Image 1 (cartoon, one colour):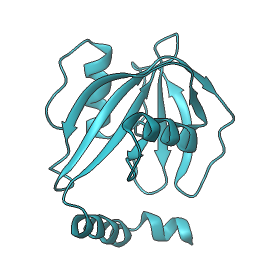
Image 2 (spheres, rainbow, N blue to C red; image 1 turned 90 degrees about the horizontal axis):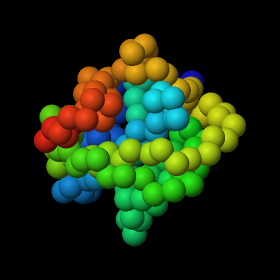
Image 3 (cartoon, rainbow, N blue to C red; image 1 turned 120 degrees about the vertical axis):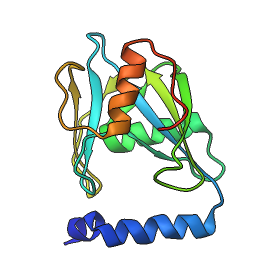
Image 4 (cartoon, one colour; image 1 turned 120 degrees about the horizontal axis):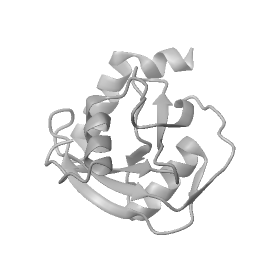
Length: 155
């Protein structure tokens, strides 16, 4: 029941509009976690149809790195063991007015035991040549990082 409520378009519409009313600008983080063989970590949220890079919003009084650490641990049971590399900062204006996303590349990490939650149904590594259905923004970010491209301006 809760999963159905969270996945409904009306619930997402309400949450997004609440943030638009209470915040003039939002910033989030995403982590592109790459293992030693070049596979990328993706999560499957229960509220959207596509697989995505793990991440989320930066909370008040939280640094971007702290938010990245928290989100990776909460969504995929990944713990950073070294500093992530900031790859790019993107505008996400097309989806959410005033939203920006900082993308970090993570190569130093430990993997814990993933347990599905109400928010995240699965987390696993994929070969970049054989990805599941991913969002358009996720696809573009994977291409930018793995092909050494310059980051775009928009997510």
